[in-house]
Image 1 (cartoon, rainbow, N blue to C red):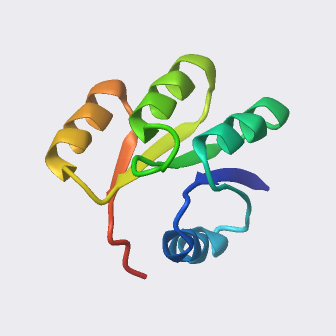
Image 2: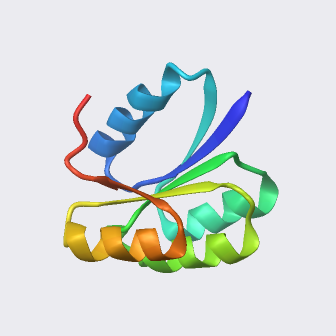
Image 3: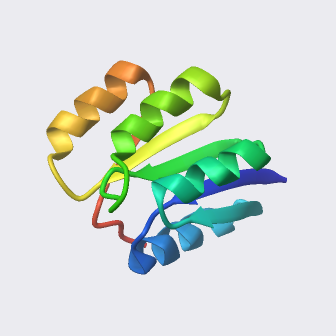
Length: 104
C-alpha cells in the first residue's frame, strides 16, 4: 500500500486532497504544520509527500527543497499564491505542482 504524507494546515484542502488520493488505496498521514511534518518524516517512509507552500509556520518551498535532498519519494508542492513563480521553482527542482483551489 502506498503511503502519502499530506502537509496542509487548511482542513478544506486536506479533505479535497484526501478525496483525490483515497481512490488509489493509499494510507494518508496528515501534518498540519511544517514542524509536525518533520516528525512524520523522521518516523516513517512515504511514497509521496504533498506540501502546501502556504503553511503558517514554515515555507513549503523550503520544506520541499530539504525533502529533495534527503528523501527518495515523489514530492508535490501546492499553493494559492504566485502560481507561475512557484511552478517554475517546482519544475527547476524536479517536483510536481498543484494550484489551489483544488477541485474534486
